[in-house]
Length: 311
Length: 107
Image (cartoon, rainbow over all chains, first blue to last red; front, side, top):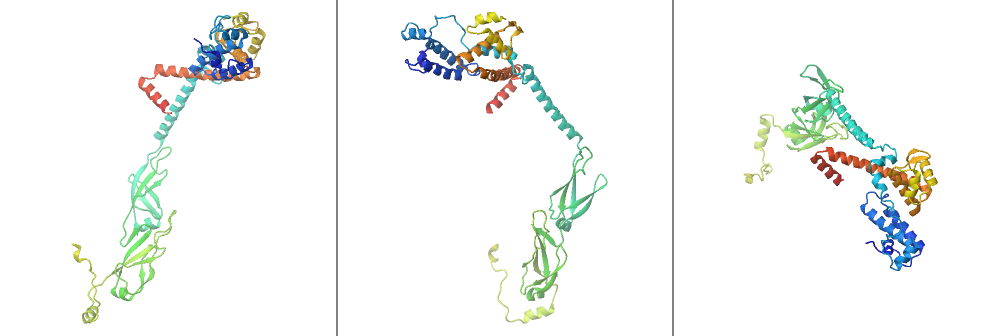
């Protein structure tokens, strides 16, 4: 049973022919099944809109419908034409549709071509990558112990390879243990040749040690130097420098030598050097013993204060 | 297949000269030769569609080639998609189809 054609087109029963026509055009454009091939409802909507329009556009039919002589489907008049625009889709969606293909690589066989080309291109790329990997030389791993000062200041070192031959390794300033140096193309033969990967270990130094970018040195001083102060010579990684010790310095006093640490490297600014004083008696000293024994005004001082309860 | 004469009787309101014009514009591609056209089902339905667009939907004659070209591209894509679907349905193992469905659904 068809719906009321006035309702389908959304017009009042008093609508003029023009109003009916324009309402129909508006609806038909949005629901034409050939223009909306994926929309199943479009076809039903479109049929209803057309049926309603057919009836109302025909003055005689409209009058008969208004008088109630025919129902909304109004089928009895005229030879049954197929509902417009509902059948082209069936052909166009099928193999016959190729007849009207746009020719932009749209021939049905092209789909196979497109896919096989895609797969072929991918397979080729994979094969190429694999061949590249197969030809490429292997990376070789080495281990190198670098003297402390070379690691701090930079330098170069010759590495004897276990498989024979040597490798000159440039040591960048500020190197730390565990760092890996890569020498491009110095690994296994191939195309491209592999790299040499050298893991370095920095050997400890007898009196320098590294704290970040600072170089710290424990510096023995005599009692006289510590008590009276004075000018002494201290070793740095750049060579000996003179510095003053203030009078009354104690074991553990840290004195700074600005800019005498690890040289600037990359984005890292130059570090400082620190000397940590360590009082050394240096064997028996009869004069000092005598002075201390005869001294009457020794200040009361307990260097172990606070340690009694430690246990 | 039917001749132009039969066509104009089958599809009411279709004008033979107008049909010839659409053929000349390559909007309709029947078999045969000028004067002896043979229309297959799809040609007939395409003419119905054109008539529908022009007369019932008041589409301007100048816009007709554009609309038909866009429609043809749409149907090209639909046929290709269907082919792809059929190939997948026929050749891909069930688990591959399932994975495909999942992947496409996620997108």
